[in-house]
Image 1 (cartoon, rainbow, N blue to C red):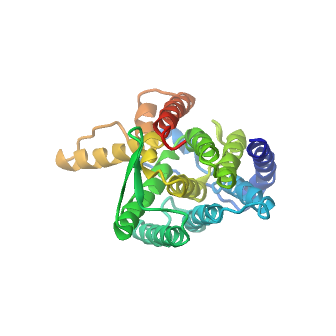
Image 2: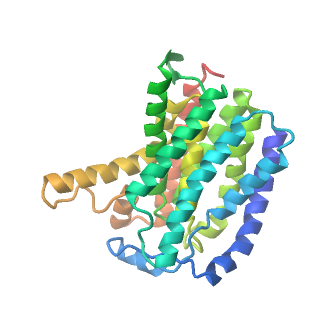
Length: 324
């Protein structure tokens, strides 16, 4: 437990220090965000805020693992971090395209989907072949599992991973939201890894607990920096990688409830718009923008959504009692 605590504290300090050095660099590179014209009009003042701030907690997470490299015996630690870094790289390419060509849209949806599916498939195959992942699907609360054919499980897992990564990405739309929602998720995975005897793996989510808390110094409203797709895709990759490394992918339904609701709000909005030839189900999607349009301040949205996630993480902890 002391190792986990030291990891949180070190990552907090490292991220805060990296952020202090990184912000002037991003300003000098003119790595500012372009705000969509269809977004809330008051978001226009955020135009020019540096993106790629996710590099702060990404670098600190890598440093934590490197500092523990001689003590880490669990190879899943490296698979999980490498997968998250690959997703972060996809996000970086997306952010770089936005900054380079001064437009809000970066890589095309097809390009991102193909890259994400390829990365997910390689991760799942490597985890399965090295014995770090089995194909028994654990059902929370009922404490039972059933075995799927490896190919069926991998295709199922690819779908879950790509969906999860993009759901986390959609949650990054209000100052401090994605990081605040993800902190309790990382606390849950840290506790679950320790409870299951995977103490080496616990250092990765523990590093993000500290890193994301420090990142909020720069991202709390009014944000001085945005994590960009670099950060949100890294976090999405880490969330789903941890779920599969701990062999509890269905727990994402609970701990990732806000991510799921954000995604469903977009799907429902688009579907309703097409069916009704122009009518809207929400004032704007993803749903955090709907609440903004209803008069909620950004801080209220962040505290409410992260509070809901914390409650769902406690419920998830109860749900995996049979594994502990």
